[in-house]
Length: 99
Figure 1 (cartoon, rainbow, N blue to C red):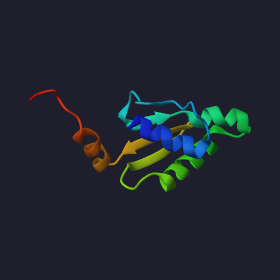
Figure 2: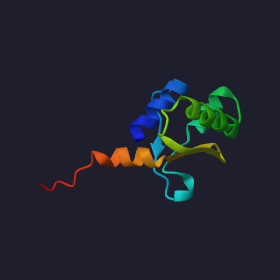
Figure 3: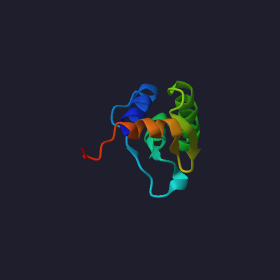
Figure 4: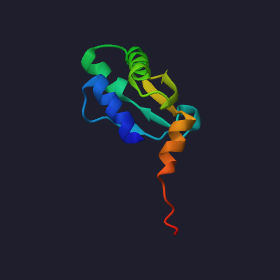
């Protein structure tokens, strides 16, 4: 899933090296990125402004049923909550190694 989110962010931003991580607190989503903070310095814009734009663009361009919610948060983070269907699909291919 991390790879899918990074690919969506690459298409939106044009940046190759994007960090997407699992936050320590569930209130910060299933996944999070600080890409807006990276882009803000170069673009000479506020990180929160960019985070809001990125969240909107991801919502519009992401496959349906991938995210339940996407939120821009201070100081310029973008939080992603996976939709239940996406979580189920992610784990449907998971194997415990039992026969």
